[in-house]
Length: 490
Image (tube, rainbow, N blue to C red; front, side, top):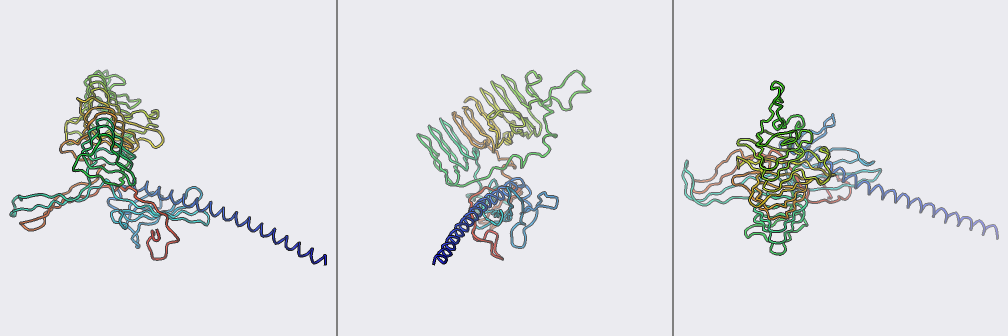
């Protein structure tokens, strides 16, 4: 009897030990699957982010070609959609995994949105799929004007005019948020993908757009003027690199600022001092070629008439003035703070005292475009007293914009975040239209339709670039069934 009992006991013990080993192996395999699954979703996210970066960078290409594809040399080029109505798949590797993404054609629709990106991440045997939907931004829609009243062929019509929908003009933009304090007086549209707060006696006489899930919060006596609306939605700010000349480093108008030597005319720098300066030029004023800094002090005036400048900073103080000459179109492109050797938080544009930036042609304003940085804080400080007016476009999606001054600021101010602490006034000059690089739509003509009693005037526009802002993110379930769209089950 002892032998059978011993045998059964040994068999039972072996079974229990085997069960424990199998359980441990299953747990290890489950942990490995969980780790691979989490890594796969991260790889899918990376693929979607790469797709978005490329969409921003090739915004001009997408105006004429709805899709992008990788050519044999590994660079992107414009192309058309494939047979299933989606752009060709793009593959890549990141973080020990691989991704594949598909994009719906630009200029069309994807459900209720204007663009969809579906990205699949694979790590080992685990695979995850996500979808990101976008709305189109920074593009105006065709405006229809309907005129009622009596008119005859060849004569102007009389009656009332009703203007159809168009993208509202936002003159104060903070990508991540806007804070208004004191007695700020804003008379342009205000837009952000974040929150808008207003305290004290701040007023906004214009439409307000806050981000999805964010808020517009006035406290104290702060308010929005009657007759304007509040909306929710996200918009993309075109990166400066998307419209900055590709050869700006070697081909620019900096030479116009250079000091002529006046000792040997045959060896003078070509074009030196074409930009007129009322003060005494030296090695650093108004232009320091080493630091690429423009400095205007006291009662001096610098009149610029060149095209595109490649600089690091602009400082105007006292009663100094920076004037854009008549018939000129001047743009200042600011290098990153890292390349300029600037410490974090350094103001690349600084206005103090009774300083002034102005345009001789009020319909065209000088543009200040800042590359900024995603790793080193860059900023702009707009001071000034109540008796001064500044006319400009300041645009830096990666740059903080601080407005501590009490001046009148005319044009467009856009940054990563805008904080107004002074009593300044922001407004739009008469007859001013945002430049094509910020609202890339050009009016090409008008057509009239209808009877002699009532007609419709359509303004024909052409899109020169397409920019998109993300609206929602969702994870898809299961594999894509054969013959269905890439975003099936999302």
